[in-house]
Length: 111
View: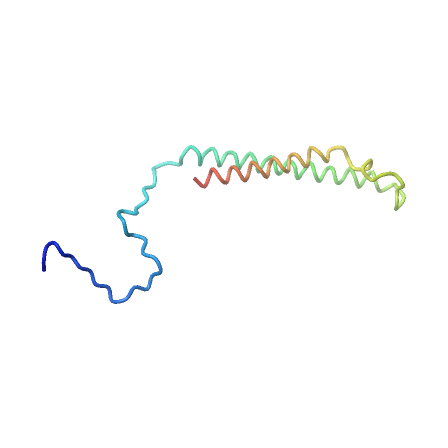
């Protein structure tokens, strides 16, 4: 066999892609979690707390609204918006902020 000519013969190739061509494809994993992963986990945890606070406030808003509607006749003449408790806007803001924080936290935690 000639030293300048190396040949590899493969009878059958069943894989769709050969992924180890072009050098070392080994991914080195660090010893500890990265800073972005730690920040991402804390952000996701804070987002979950905000989201749960929003759910709690939304439940309280629903209870207050139902209590204001129970003594009413079946079809009140006034616009329905006056019967909705005033805590609906903070509940929606907390739900939205919690959802966004959880998504950002998961994004950074996956890095």
